[in-house]
Image 1 (cartoon, rainbow, N blue to C red):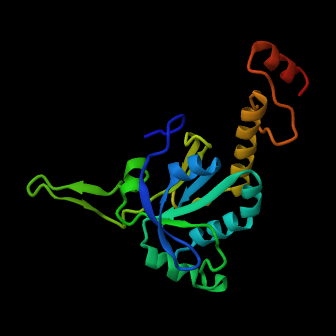
Image 2: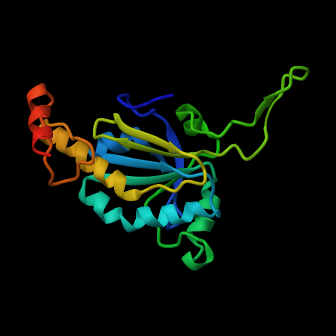
Image 3: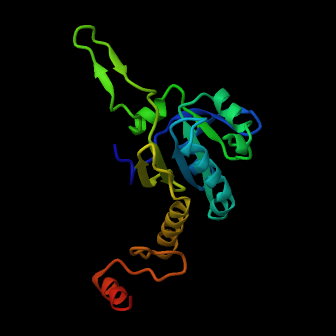
Length: 212
């Protein structure tokens, strides 16, 4: 299900922070009540391999996101207790000690199911018993959502399990969307902050293409 151009689902989910505090987060409300953009990224499982590299990469870029009026939130279907165990594990032992942004613990999979990002490729239905089983852990793909200050999704993407994300691309997308909001111009291919954008009409496109 595509959510671009729509409001992010209005659901409250358990979360954990580096202090061991368990609390509730509604991502839609986080954007609206704080008048900030939100980057929400999902990863398959705690204590795995590609996942800690991504969580540390987002942490390293956290100050940049915050300078762009953007909140970062991680998420998986692990429990809050497992999140805290991982947050308490040293980086050189595969842990995510030092990560300071909150991590959703969608252990009941309510939000992941609503977003349609669970790996159910091995779901099987037994005609005789009516029982549905999943061969695997029923975890999420590497899904990413960028949400604006009104709670509207302006970007979503989904990577397969082995493919780590490029954090710099999400910084670029935040810059581009902010430029659109502030300047009313549209951003062409490979646009980066400081480069020329263009007006969304034939003249604007022609002028841009003739100069690049």
